[in-house]
Picture 1 (tube, one colour):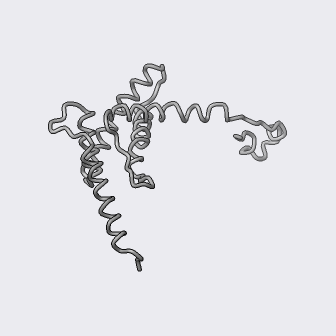
Picture 2 (cartoon, rainbow, N blue to C red):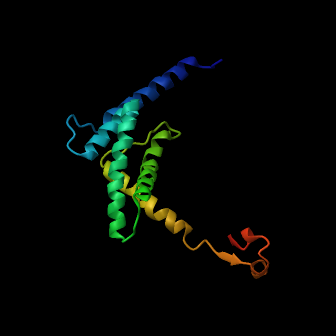
Picture 3 (cartoon, rainbow, N blue to C red):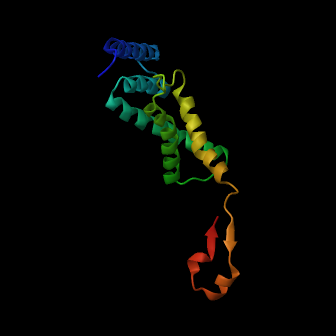
Length: 161
C-alpha cells in the first residue's frame, strides 16, 4: 500500500513529461540526406519504442563501422581478414548501442544529439585499439625444463600467466 498515491502518480506523470521533452529535443530529418541523418532518425524512433528502427539502426551502423574499420586498418597498416573486420565493426556498434539499454538514476537516457558517425568512430577506435593496449605486455610464457625432458604432461609445458 502506497503512503501518498497522489505523489506517486505525480512523479510518474512528471517522468513521462520529461521523457517526452527529451524525445522532442532530439534531431529529426524529414528527408535524410546521408547515413548520419538516417541514424539520428532511427535513434529517435528507437527511443520512442520502435523495434523496426532498432533493426535498421543496427544494420546501417554495422555497414558504416565496417567502412571505418577498413580505413583505420589501412591507415595503420594492419591486415584484417573479412571476419575480423565484421567482428570489430560489431564490437564497435555494440559499444555505442549498449548505452541505450542503460537508464541513469535520475531517469535520463543516452542519445546522440549531433553526429552519430563520430559516436561510431569512437566505438571503432575502442574496438581496434583499447583491447590491444590493455592486453599488451601482460602475457608471459613460462617453460618448465623438467617437463620438456619427460613429456609426461605436455599441457603443462607452456602456460600463460
